[in-house]
Length: 280
Image (cartoon, rainbow, N blue to C red; front, side, top):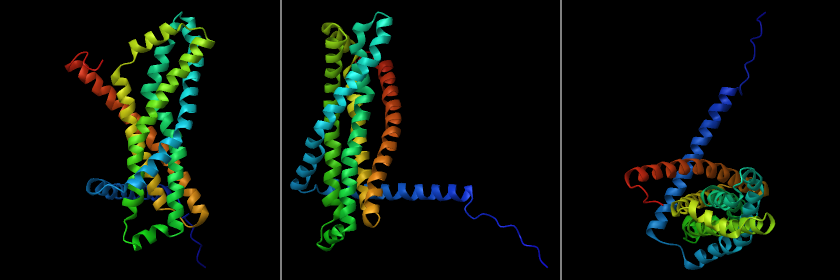
């Protein structure tokens, strides 16, 4: 009578880890090929103007209320959180510098991109996913139109062009919101608010935030369109694609923010060493 051999669990931690690595590499490779094909269309032929204007209206104009609310409350929250600490050091008049530099360098671009990933990214992913489920994308191919050129390129260009502009609006409204709360509620002198904001915020800081927002917009559009094009079947697949679009966009925005932040700071130090004062 033979003794039964112990059963080895098939789905071990190593198997799950290897499967996750393989799936991640396949996803990144497919996303790269998707972006490469889209880039080829941008170089060779621009999309129809009607598609481009429609996407710009949806991404830009309809996002302004969200950006205004987000930017305004960010500035006021910064004023509330910073005032007590500055008052302890008798530096409350310099609160404008903290609000302005925090907004233009970090909070404005990042929070605006996250809000737009939730509003614009999920919308694009759900729209393209619905077109995939209802076979409208296949119908475009049957009619001789390339879906990436017709659907993806206008959305990508609109995000790259308009999200930096929306970031500028968020920065401006946030600084105004911080000014209003600081001067009208907290009693900070309006002259010193703007004086220290001008002294401590340089053009390089503003351009660095806009530079980052351009990459955030490209990442949001590329990831959202890719998830929509690879949507699963049925309503569940559309919902999953929209969720993945936001989650992946959020993760990539955080990674890009770190990498671009390090690059911008190192470039600033290098330029200050070679050409002192040129970036001020």
